[in-house]
Amino acid sequence: MARLRALGQARRVRIWVTGAAGFVGRRLIARLAAADHVVTGVDREVEITDAPRVARSLAGARPDAIVHLAALSSPAHAQREPEHAARVNYLGTRAVLEAARREAPAARVLLVTSGEAYGSSAPGAAPFREDDPLAPRTPYARSKACADLLGARYAASGLDLVRIRPFNHTGPGQSEDFVAPSFARQVAAIAAGRREPRLSVGNLASVRDFLDVEDVLDAYQRLLDPGVPAGVYNVASGIGRRIGDLLETLIELSGATCTIEVDALRVRPTDCAVGDASRLRAVTGWEPRIPWRETLRRVLAAAQAA
Image 1 (tube, rainbow, N blue to C red):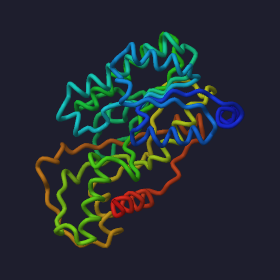
Image 2: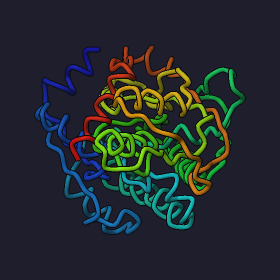
Image 3: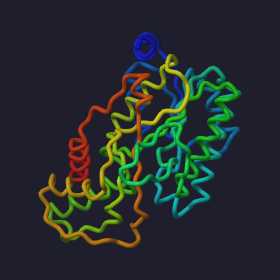
């Protein structure tokens, strides 16, 4: 991947990143800065739905590449505030893409949407591919699907745009709105004797495709390469994992002994979503590298240290 090496080493690239203070954004910025790129990160200081302000920020950065990560990323939060999710995830995307079209029309743009836009499949069904129809089932997924389709329109008009559909990913420092850190916090507290030995959980039967956040960051870096064709790419492991298995692994790693109680407020409908990243692999050589058990070990360690 000669062009990828050029992006990473031979020349400094100016990159404008939204969602800079988020779980993924802060890690991506650190990686890009370590590769000697000039990175401008924006977060809450630039309201992402304020189109004129977004355009001024982007124009000032004069970017060669743009990574749009800013979003309301918690499905649970989006369920509680669907209008807010739509405003941030769709209107924010529109502000960024319109600014890119006007102020940096030659820039490579990474638009990060979500594998949740595909909806759910039957257990054992083939993993979702990029040409499968979008069938979002939740307010979060619908807002991301709309942003994805908007990106397709801008790509058709000539923007060098890569639509990325990452499936579930986690790591140390992720919000407890997400399943792995939520479970890890409870398990760590039980193992340390700070909590009664009862776990409050939602639906353990759902099947998801999980990755380590560092593997996802590797994919994003590779897709910044202007030699990679623009288009749509899943970022996924291709492996379906039951939420209940995730919990059992965390309990085993912690050494805790506990009972499990279902909290009706946490329960979501049973779903199954696994992605096929063959296209990404064929074009960039990307493969997930970090074993899932190691990812959970690090998530648990972070919870124990908190």
